[in-house]
Length: 43
Ligand SMILES: [Zn+2]
Image (cartoon, rainbow, N blue to C red; front, side, top):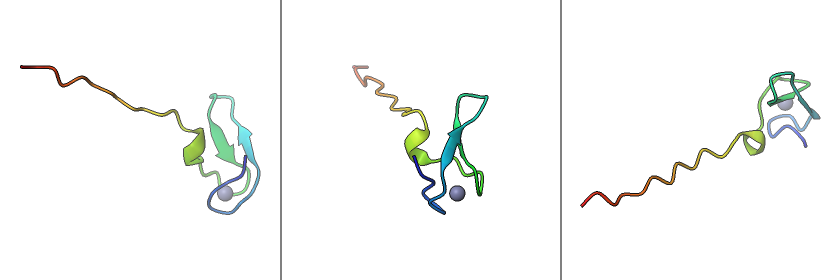
């Protein structure tokens, strides 16, 4: 996995997330997909 900002290697942090070794940016692709598929059946 590479950083999307500087293309540097991305490592897994102790928090279980990912961070760039260069700039510390957390890649979007590493984030948990919070696709809140909330059903709108409220009628
Ligand atoms: Zn970076």
